[in-house]
Length: 427
Image (tube, rainbow, N blue to C red; front, side, top):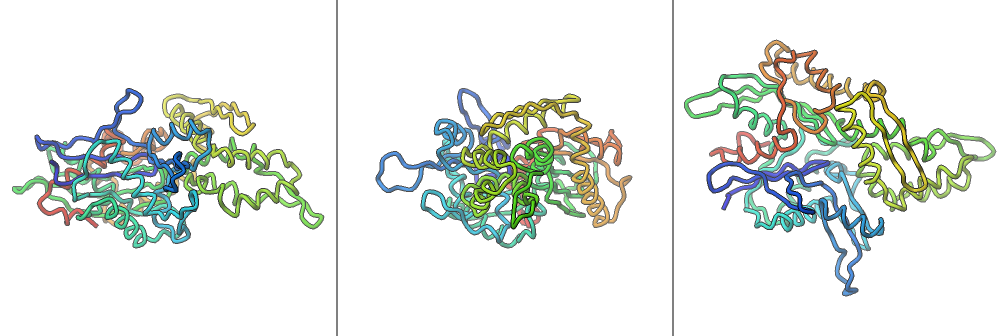
């Protein structure tokens, strides 16, 4: 039995790895609908218990949660991207079937379902990844750590090690090095983009590691999704429209549509003050049908349907010059061709923030582009051509390497778990 497990709990997907009997790291495998997979969708579905015995709600996660959501036609609470709540002092809990759920409750519930669907017993030691900078406004990293540990201990872990996600990816990549090298790892998750500059050397005692810099920024795949939603979808739900107040026509506040930038906020919007305010706005709106469409969208808990449509279009744009966004929810029908050039113009502000974060990493490391020997791109948004092009232009295409974008962090975490001194990698 493995002594430890490596868990990359991601905004979009979660991957777990363990060391097998042969001493090799392998992913924890799952099977759903006759298909095997390693990347477990980071979603939860809460539904009312069927037996009326006063138990708490039924809970499921991953594709089983999605099945339940579809089966119940939205008559449940579907939570996605909840990692983004981790460092937010503004999020205390959410009410789910008369039960208040804190972040640590959500994470513990999620991990228990991962364990059930893996059909395994977790070891007592975990090496868990964490972003360099957590997502959200004014993130509280100490709070996030406290919440993580509360959840992990509730599940049964006794020895907990936190490792920066790009450091784990760097360790994974370093296994293929034949010579000493200074590596820049760029990890593009759903909620954050993190960068580490690390010096690796082959010594008598194995792989020697010297961290030079760690930086992060709260923009990544979700922010790219939001740009598509803002340009193509939000107007169908009232963005740009007006309402009457004391005889004056005023714009509908953009703050409601900003919720589309964070899937986690959209997941709980149906049970928030924003929803009640939108009901009032529907009565005073100069275009009430669009506001009612927004309310119907929230009533149907259609965020996941929109996520799938946007994600499909974004993925298509990684391989083609254009894509079609097809979304049919809550009485709104959208069929819109998106050019890659449009998409790249929309995400230009995020690309600039990423560039700035790389600048900070190099300054912190005290080196320039020419002193970087390899650049390892990992995470889902590393597939976006405009992202890769920034690094190729800056460091040279011959230095760029990718591979195992969805599992490299989790593999690195378990590899670190085999180290005699895990503490030198942990934070």
